[in-house]
Image (cartoon, rainbow, N blue to C red; front, side, top):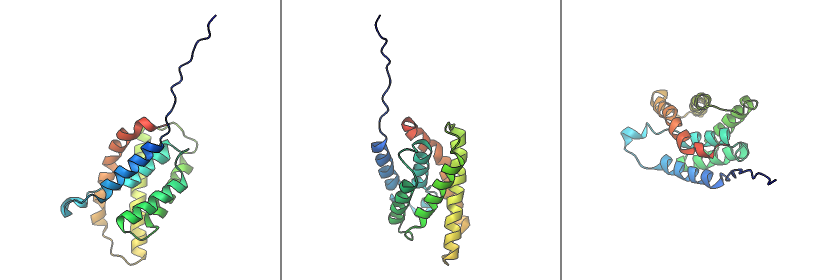
Amino acid sequence: MPIAKLNYKKRQDPLWMIITSIVIGSVLLVYPMAYETSGWRPAVMLLIMLFWILYQPGWSGIWFAFGLGIFTDLLLDAPLGLNALSFVLITFATRYFIRERRILTFGNSWVIAIIAIVSHSAFIWISQTISGINFSMARHWQPMLTGILAWPMVYFFLYKWRI
């Protein structure tokens, strides 16, 4: 009797897709826009980092978030470590609260993304207020709104590379 061949689909390593998404995200982050529309630019690197943290935990973790945060600080000419610390704290909290749950639906990940976006904005607001930088929350609700609405697009473009 012949032994039945099992066709296992080999999973591809997501390394090149992670690198590609970071390059595309960095272009979207610094692409010149008109002043009126630049306020609506979402935190693209936060969304990309959050996707890989949620769906490729073996490939991305705390050090990935730290490196991406430092890279974001350099791109935005922000105080070095500001986005890095925010990304690391969000990564740690996300990993801690979903450690028991490995099956994430789209709705669950969207709720996590909303919490992460609001937490990131709150962290930036608190840290800039402490350092004496004038921070207007009225101007920062726009990127929060577009970030929340951009999560389905990030998910749609990268969902093929989930675990």
